Image (cartoon, rainbow, N blue to C red):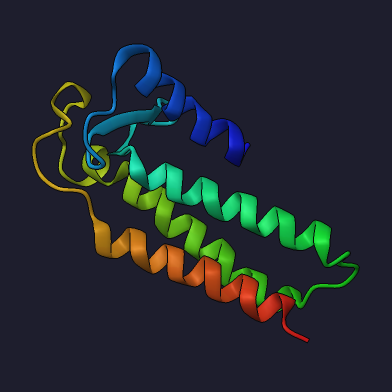
Length: 124
């Protein structure tokens, strides 16, 4: 899924010249509400999907420290909230996604929790 997501944007760039800038907004999903974010944010999450999946495969993981995976789950929830933030909390119409900013602190906190959770879960 991570590889597909990254190449989705690569092919959009090749075929139609979009995205132009790292912070160009995209509508990621429409359910349960529109998920809105600069396109680079799902690309970063996709990179973590790839890295996390490779770690599981290459380390031949049989047992993970599951308690730490709760940190990763909380991080994923924070990232999800950052994607729906504009629609839920600022009442911005999806047609006007360039108004206002993306909640980067919330998104970065989610990334830190995900990475920290995985590092702790894989640590021996």
